[in-house]
Structures are given as structure tokens and as C-alpha cells.
Image (tube, rainbow, N blue to C red; front, top):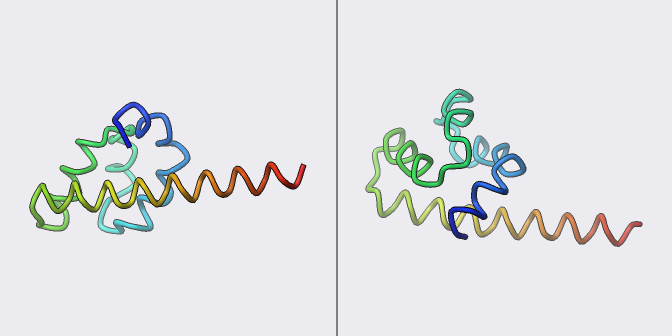
Length: 80
């Protein structure tokens, strides 16, 4: 997911950020405002992992979250 897509989906996805990375505070999540590089930095800081590992986790999470959002939207559309 590119940066523009990440920022565009942030409001829908930020609830799952807290579920995935519980060490991030509500203030952290609010301050991130959908900036992927800042999310990666916070994950790295809070979990004491490398930037590469944090980027990998963020990318995997974003891919699965986007798929979940699309599935939910498709399912909701079929109900109409």
C-alpha cells in the first residue's frame, strides 16, 4: 500500500492499529494521522525492533487490514 492509500484509509484502520500494537497509546495513534513512516517509527520505538522489522509488520498489517475493509464493504454492498 502506498503512502497516499495508507493516509486515505487511516480513519478506518486506526482501531485495528491499537489491537495490533497495544503498546501504542491513543495519543500516539492520534498523532500519527495516517503517516506510515511515523507509525513505523513508533512501532520500532515501543517494541525495540529494527526499522526493517517494523516496516515489514506495518506493511503486513496494512495489507490484511485493507483486505478486511474491502471484504466488509463488498459484504455490506451485497445486503443492499
